[in-house]
Length: 159
Image (cartoon, rainbow, N blue to C red; front, side, top):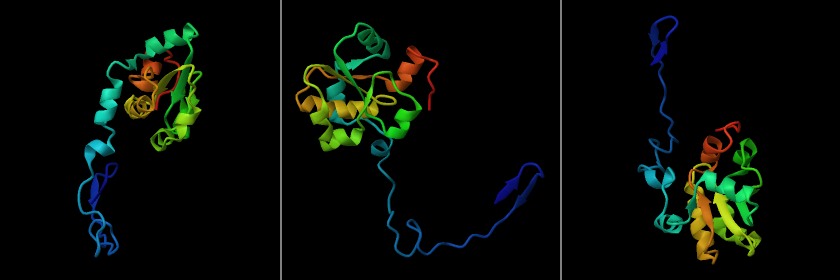
C-alpha cells in the first residue's frame, strides 16, 4: 500500500515473493530472531566486572589531560567514526584489534591506558581484554565521546 499525502490517495502495489528470500524463500537461512542484547551492544559479564571501579567521566579525563598525566588515550571506534569526531590526543585502535589481541603489543607499559568509544559499550569490552592482559590500572570513559562533547567541548559534532 502506498499513501500519497499530497494527493490524499492510496494505491495498492502487487509484489511477487522472491523464491530466494532468506526469510520466506524455498530454503530460508534466517529462521529465528537475532539475539537482541548481543546485537544492540549490551555489555558482557567480563566487561561489567572490568568497568567496576575503572570508569572515569569525561570531566575527569579532561583534568588528567590538563595536568599532563601520563595517559595513553585510545579510541576503539571504527575509522569512519573517528573521522567525524575525536577527543584531542586520542589514538585510533579499533575494537576488533583488541578482541584479536593485536592491539596489546602497541600499548605502552609506562602510561595509564584510557579507552573510549562512542558511548562506553565497546570501550568496556576492550577494557576487559586490556585488564586481563595485565594493565590493572586501565580505565575507560563512561559515556564515551558523546559525554566528551556534552560535558567538555560542545562545539564538536555528534553523530
